[in-house]
Length: 169
Length: 329
Image: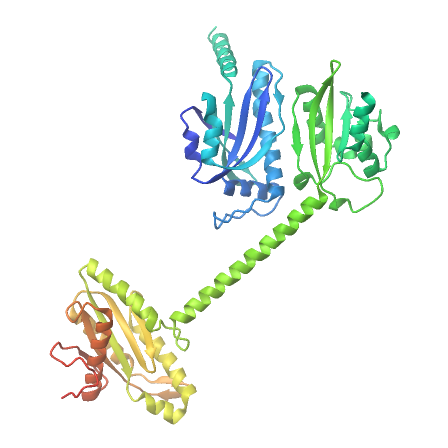
C-alpha cells in the first residue's frame, strides 16, 4: 500500500471519487486516541478487490452502471477494511503508546454527499490518506479517511513535536 | 447472576468461545456442544487449537494474539475463510460457511479473547443462488441485446445483399448532407439501374438473378471509397452517395469507373453473364439541398439516360421535368 498524499481538511478526497455511490468500511476507535476511520472505494474498485480476494479472474468492469455487490462481497470488504484500519490505527497507538479500543467494522454503500455529511458534522478534523495498492497484479485505488477528535489531534501534534525535538537534538 | 449469564450464553444462537492469554478454552457454549458434539467438560481447559485445529493456522493465531495483547477486534468472513469450527462427525465440511468475530474481554485484570462463530451456510447459499440468478439474467440480457442488434441490422439492411436499405440510406444521406454543409463540400447521389436485368431473371430464374445482384453489390463496393455509401433500394436499383467531393469532374471519374467495372462478365454458377448499368446523378447543393429530392432527381437522370443510351451516366439538368417517367426527347 502506498500513501500518496496527505491532506488536512482540504476535502481533496472528493476528487478521488466520481459522483454516485461509494463502498465504505468503517471502524470507530477510542480510549485516549479517539475517532473513526473509513476505507472507501468506488464500487467498481471494490468489486475488483473482492474478485481478486476470492481468486476469480480480475476482468475490467465493462459497464460501471451495473456493479453488483452481494452480501458476501460486502463481508469480504468489511474484513479488508478491518484489517487495514486495524493496522493503521494500531500504528497510531504504538506511536502514542496508548492502548486503543476498536469497534467491529461496519460496511455501508453510501452516496458521496452522505459521507461528506457524516464526516464533516461538528467540525471534525479529518486526516485523509489517498491510498492505492497492488493486489494480484491489479491496481486498486481508494482512500482511507480518518476523522479524529480534537484531543487526538493535539496528542498527535504533541508527539510529532516531541519526535521533531528528538531528531533536532 | 453467574447462573443467569451462563443460561443466556447457552441459549444464544451463535458459537461462543472464550480463551485466556495461554489460548486455553475458558468458555464453550451449548451451541458449540450441539454443533461439534464436543462437550464443555471435554473442551474447557484444552488449548483451542487442539479442539479447533484451524486456530493452529498462523493467521488465526495472530488474530487471537492481537486481540489478547493489543485489544484489536477482527471480523473474518465465511466467503473468504469458509469455516472455523467443524462438526466432529465427518460431514461435507466444504459446504459449511461461518462468519467469525474476535475481540478482547477484560475481567479481573485479565484479558480474554471472545470468539463468536455465526453459521451463515444457508444465508450464503441463498446469496450464491442469487448470484447465479443475476448471472443468468445478465447472460439473457446480453442475448437480448445481441438479438436486438441483429433485428436492428435486419431492419436497416437489405437481406439479399446486406447493403443498407432505403431507411438507412435516408438516415445516412441526412448525415452526409449535414457534413457537406459544414465543410462547404459537394455531395453526389448516383442512381444505378442494371440494364435488361429482367431478362436474366426470365431466362435463368430468380436464384440466378439473386446471385447476380449479390455479385453486382460486391463489384460496386469495390469501385467506391470507404467513406462513400452504397445502398440497395430494391429490385435492380442501387444508390451510391459520394461524400467529400471537390468538383463535378470527380463524380464523373467515379461514374466512369463503375461503368467500366461492368465491362467484365460476372461468373454466376460457373456461367459468364454480361450485364451493363446506367447511372443518373444529382448534386448537392446545386440541384437541391433536400435528401429525398436528390434521390428523385438522380432517378430522373438515370431514367433519361436509360431511354436514350444505356451503359453510361448522365447528370441531372434543372431544365427537365421532375417526373422521371414523363416523356423525354
